Structure formats: structure tokens, C-alpha cells
Length: 454
Image 1 (tube, helix red, strand yellow):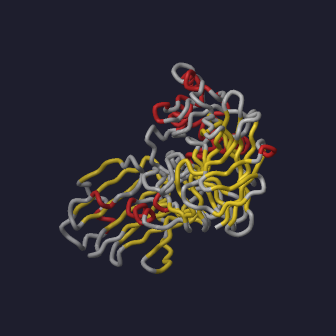
Image 2 (image 1 turned 90 degrees about the vertical axis):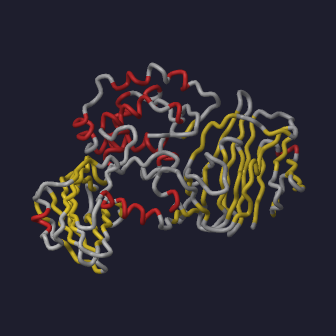
Image 3 (image 1 turned 135 degrees about the horizontal axis):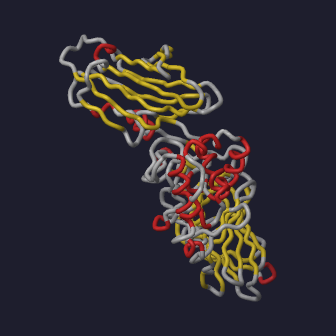
């Protein structure tokens, strides 16, 4: 787990972050002790089947993890936590240890210094309950000069090459010649509910065989040289045999269900990386923390159904972008490793840092980012020892949004808003709109709003 980039302390049931946070002081020694006497791999796996433990772990995850690792563990600025590619070890006890000790140099705090052991075990149980894809995947390659050797016979011979696949994706590009067969074997994790299949797309003359727990799974022809193979719920041993015969070979493998479509092979994953994935706010606001094109690092995107969307920077405590459209295309970022930025689904009104920012006596208020909340009215909060600012927004009809500012502890200080250099259509009854500045009425200094319309 890599809750990167935020300095964090934790209060209540929201994401909390403060200045040069005291949590870092605890990282060195206390966190590692959390794993002494903790559960074994098998015990954690059994805990991942306990509905009460899963519920408790999910609540903790959604409070402190989802902003970096995704609502469904799919990854964002932090790693994907449900597939087979794990940088710091994928066994249950390794996940627990990584969660407890953290990676302070990468921005992830030691949760062993924040939560008790039972809380962390429940969170790991929830993560384990959401796992999908291969684990312990190995491969064998069989080369043959004769192109008419049957698949069954060829894969019973001595392999010319074998090994393990640490990323747990089947990779048919490991071969050296044109005539070959490959066998991939490992533990496949399938969701506990619903019908699921291994879907294979292959070349016209290529051969494929899939075995589940030692028994052959019969192919279902779904057209376009694509086949489905039924699999069980939960963990099972899967062996996939592939014989390349076609001049244009193809071996794309997916795990498919009613609401699931995940790559199991390198070629399938590469194809999905070239695909658009749209994130839309259908009936309520959505908050997402993925890299967004043109916005500063660490920015948090907020999308609204039928309204404008915006990006908030917890570094400068300001609104750094505003756009219309259906929110985001996270396709370039879908691998969960944060390599490429997501793109907006619409048109920019502005992207600029610091953008819209609270100024006190003409200078930026440099409080530490404290927390943000999600739900029907996402809100961002930052403060210093005596003063506090809260920023939220609400739709104001199509292509219009109203930003609300609440200030505490500023007394009679002169409050203004810095506005982007690009001209915006800004209106407010709480002050005067000037070029590049909004002057707040003295009577409204503790609470005021501005409306931006496209």
C-alpha cells in the first residue's frame, strides 16, 4: 500500500492531514512491533471470509486508503491492491507488515502507529477479500520443429524453458522461436459471488486448453475467435495450455463476470491500456485522486452530475482547475501505477496554480491541509494553530457551480480571493468582483460564496 504524497494524522472517520505531522516521529520503532504475534497467512485468509471483519476493514480502508488506492482498490497515485502485481510482497502477512511499517520515504505513513493490530488485520482481511487474478503463476515453453505435433503431446515433453512470472500475468512473448507451445499454471482468485469465466481471444488456428483443479473446462464459442471457460468462485488451480499455429497469433486472456473485466495476460493488459475508461458522476458527487493532465501533482478531482467539475490542490490549498463535461477519462492511468495523467471529458475553463485562493491582507493563507470529506457535499479543510478555512461547492444549474468558503479565527482581517488570470464569469452577492481579485464584504468575511458559470 502506498498512500503517497500526503502528510497524515487521523481523526474521526475522514482523511486527516496536518503540517509537519507528528506521525512521522512514531514511524521508526513503534510501527514494526504491530506484527508480533499477529495472524498467520492462513489465519488472515480465513479472516477474509468473515463478513464482520470485512465490513470493519472496508470502513477503515474507505477512511484512509481509497484516495490513493482507489474506491475499488484499482489503484491511483498508489498501487493497485487487488491484482497479482505486488512490489513489497503479496502474502497476507507481507501485506500486513507493509501496512504496519509503512514507507515514509514514499509518503506512506506507518499505520501501526495509528491503529491497533485488530484494526489492521481487518483491513488486510478486506483487501484479501477483494483479490482477483493469478498468484504464483509459472510458465513452461515447449519448442517443436514439427508444426503438426498435437498440443497434448507437445506439453507432455520436456520443456525447453521454464520459470515464474512475478507480475502474475501470462506472457506469450517469452518465446524464442516461431513454433511453440506454452503452459501457464497458478492459483486463480475469482470473486465469491456471481458467474465468472476465463475469456480467451486467440488466432484462427491457435489451440487453447484450460483446466480448473485438474479438470478440463469446456470452451464456449462466443464468436470472433473468442472463447469462455467456466471457473469456480474463490481460489482454484488453473492450467492454461496454448499452442501457436496461426501466422498472426493472438493470446489475450481476461477474467470476465457481470461487472468484472480484468486482464490475465500481458497482451490483454496492453490492449486495455489503450482503451478509454470514463469516470462519470451519475447521481452524486465523485471524488478521485488520480494524476490529471494540466493539474499540479497531488490534486484531487471533484465531479458533479450536470455541473462543472474542479480540481483542488492540498499543497496550495486552492482551486487549481475548472472544467465542464462528464468528468474524467482515466484510461491512460488505468494500470494503477500513476504513470500517465487522466484526461478531462470536456473543456477547460481554466487550469492554473494557485487559481482560486484565499488571501489575508493580500497574502495567501498558508495553513496546513487538515482533511477532506466525501459524500453529497465534498469539503476541503485547512488551518493553522488559530485559524481555519473550509471550502465546498454545489451545483448551480447546468454549467454553473457555487463555491462556499467558511473562515474561523480571522477577526477583522481583510479577506479577498485571488482569481485566475484567465477571465472567468464570476458573480457574488457577498462582495465585489474585480479583475484577478474578489473583495469580500466586511460583513461576510466569515462566510461567503462565489458562482462561476461557463
